[in-house]
Image (cartoon, rainbow, N blue to C red):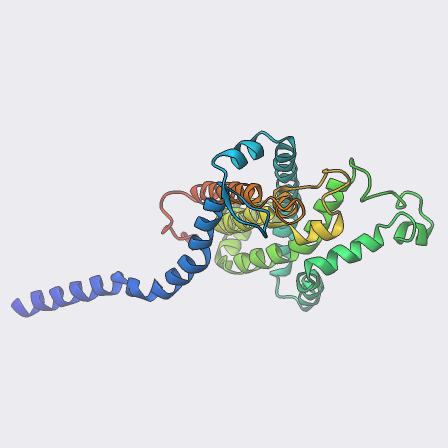
Length: 306
């Protein structure tokens, strides 16, 4: 009896040791790296937002002048609105396309593999190269519209304030849908086949299986992809800078581009720092909100029921 109790205690201690996981010290190098290259520079930007500096001369204390100027500026309000619109339209365009393509490419057929390779080609191109290519294709005089003799395509796509935002959303989707397709493809392949087999026995069709099995099982994949998509939309800079430069006027001057133009063209580093702080706060708030959607108990298995 005493031997049995002893074994039980040893097994209990072994179980606790196994659940303890690796030492927290293993994360120390990553935390030190994050502290040195993310937190400290961010604190420097916060301090710089209270100063006046043109990038070359002496730095002088400005107090809340930059904050007051930026928060009451109509350009900042427009930039925030443009950022919100690009974020919204990018999300509603990219998410359903990425899910459907991810489900399609998750199949084991060879032709799907070939198509998946073609889908992922835009992912290999740089944003600047994509912007230059589309700028040439959409040129109203020498682009694909005049070349094909189709007046409907010979629009001033990048010069019309009513069209340019949707063109930007299209180009962003063209480049980044393959990335999110890859995420959904991996998520779909993790779903147990037994769920679909049971559904087929019950007489469920493809659409019903997609709605009642695939989508619920992709819950955490959707949250991950949405977080990357929404927070990543705050970092669209190079593509829009090369494609439109923020124009026409300030039609596509989203917040990151506004920060760059304020800092490096207007030489107002203090005001640009304010915009940088606002950008970080918005990004953190959106990421936290999307993670909250995943529920409080993040240890619940997505494969429960398999």
